[in-house]
Length: 250
Image (tube, rainbow, N blue to C red; front, side, top):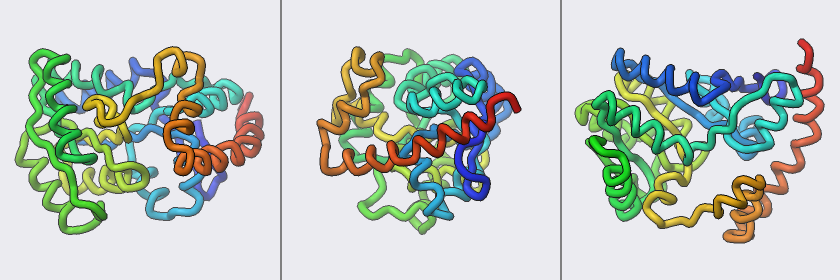
């Protein structure tokens, strides 16, 4: 399903977890890289105003729905998508990696968070190997020399997938470049997922997530940063709703 106006639209091309996991198993077995993005409303507010972000998104070969509004819009269009937040995908993907003996890598956040996330993953997923971690310097440029060095290290590490926690749009731009610079590695942008695993950030309680209130939890935790973001998200919903209705039945 497509989201956004024609000149800056992106397509969610993986509808279910089962389809995603099949695609990942296929790529791991072939040692073939990929770029996985999780589309949410915040991304949809940024894409029309950031050509580099849009180009990076369109270079991704796997895009899933992250955020209930995106899922609700897909149902309104008659093309239902399964909810797949990046944070919720880490453990099941790591389980696949352990089964297939595919090492993983972690890039982003801080050294302390990566250490905690790696320890948690190895503890929760028996047989998992973390072959590389890197917390880039402050002001990291995903198109610069430091990024190139990371791509070289990733290729040498034997990692089959790199979980990226750099925030949008840096993580998606980094992932899109990784398709060319480290073609044997998969890249999955997972936002704050590593910080949640390490305990450096506290995710909304499960009941709030079940009630689709995770946005409220995040707004209360960091109002100065999140309230303006959610205001922008709510502002584009009417247009996206009309677009979804136009797609219905086509």
